[in-house]
Image (cartoon, rainbow, N blue to C red; front, top):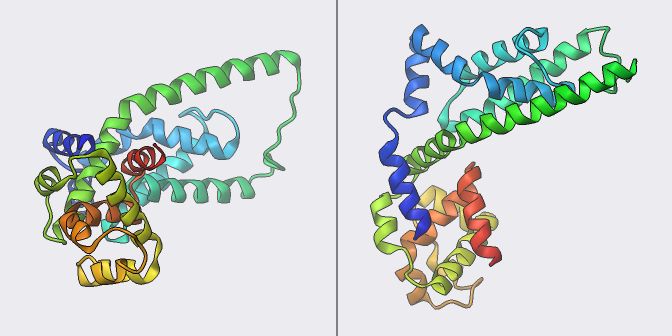
Length: 251
């Protein structure tokens, strides 16, 4: 129930989805493009830093490579591929930075010499600053990324004639019932045959599921909408929503 209420609340707060912004940018909206890139600068710095094994400042060449790669990701991104912009751009940024590193003589390896003791102190100080900066970025962007996930998820369940309102109305009322429904969804998501039926025929393979679970057909049918929704979360690229499901299954 908490998951469904969170989905409804965050979806209402979002004014314009990230995908809508990307569509406009790909159509030539340079102002929106610059605004989007600027808002993701901390993410770009974090991603590039993870490759270089040191904190990267915006004045560094490596950051410029990451910036160009992120812009490339915006131009090439398509929600049809099933990944979020964050996942897609992170891979592309890392690839471009690695290509740059390999072309530079200064990068003989990613294990740098410690050098003078003062350099070590400065490096440790910089590392602390980097950690604080990354943590601050994470706090500021988590809500936006959750909203992005929820909007993407909303569009997916619409293909199955479902809505967030349906989830609220059909979410199992008791904790044990919700957990059992999630177990069924997990089995479906991990079984290639069952998953293909769900995705290709847009229906829950209830008859086939009976061979894998001890839950009655009547119970599966009663929780059909909820099971479909949880299955789609497990199948898709939903980092935040999967964390919630994982917490419920482990309790």
